[in-house]
Image (cartoon, rainbow, N blue to C red; front, top):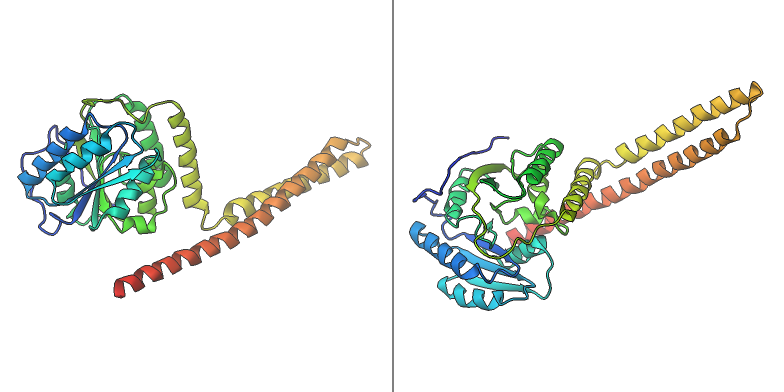
Length: 328
């Protein structure tokens, strides 16, 4: 699948944005204790809108902040004709903040934009212009120095190899059609795999280089070595979901038959040894163990196939309901 790459050091002064997109997008901003950045962030977004003739929605999702992020956002949001403030009672995470913002949006396109000002709001018109070329999702690829470059690079490399996604950075700013979220079920922290899941559904993915700037104020909210471990486990979960969820018998049935076959071979070996006068009781125990495990996995494969069938029916029903709402 093709992708667009445009390398630059600073966002260009002027970008032509399709008239149909100029007011048909929402900037969704997850924020957790970002009071130091919100005033400057909103001023820069307003300046970008004014310079490029944009009139999009601005939706800030306060993800359980303990500072005055909400109060500042409400005050600064008066700059925009279309502004919404959504709040979580406690910190839920970026995925939940994205979904909350998407539910509040009334546009066909969403721009996921961080509140830490490590990306310039001047990237928004560039994303809009790139999306107009026929993509369903355009990912920003971070260009610049940052602390987690090595970890991020390894994670993105593993994701590309595992899922064949035509994007080199899965966890940066991005623009995408709102309807993509109707086809993708995101669990906690799965915003990192949003592009992977959407690509698996057939949505067209593009990519655009965006400059990453040093954080101006505040502290990063996504540090800690534990996130690397959790991210790897999530990657395995998504891989399993995409590879085996539709045909689970390929994994469980094959593994079960393999264990049963191995049990038969061990059993034959035990019988031969017995006939030769060399009884070895642990081999019989191993035969029983392999047989039980093999039959159990094979049976689990049947149950998983039934679940996969039900899931497919639910997906078809959801699609039918969506189409009926469009027609009504």
